[in-house]
Length: 155
Image (cartoon, rainbow, N blue to C red; front, side, top):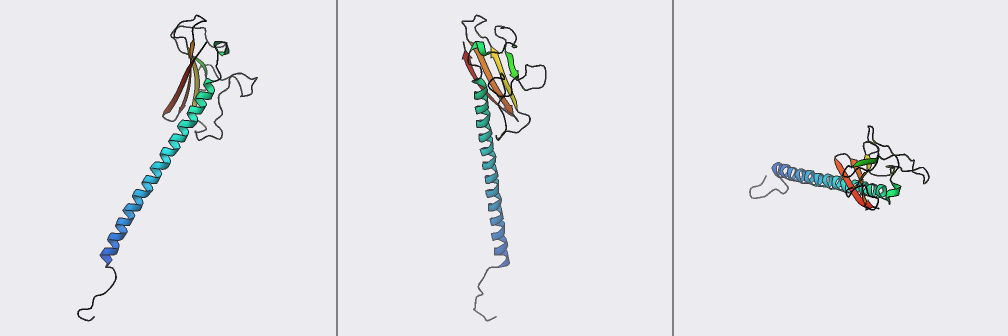
């Protein structure tokens, strides 16, 4: 090597430092991507659960459409109209065809898990059992650790 002549190129230390900086940057970028995907899936699932709850709620549009199998009116007591929970709750009666009666919404072709999703309709008579007073209908969809609740009043 001649005196006074500089060599061009990078030292091993410069290359190692550059690789470390690049790997930290790529790791952070990957974590950001995964967090964004997770938030997107959560938002889509919440929207689907909201649609299902709203659709179930539309099935009871008058007091007369509350199934006869529901226990008699009890002021201030919430009663289950239909549920797919295990236990002795009233179950969904229909298969989704118009003449089959009250049926839960299908989860096929949705982003919700195919098992472990609870759909429930409840009724409450906050102003008493007088037929002139409204009944409060609540539709609940539970999936994972999330719960979506929609409610309306019917006469």
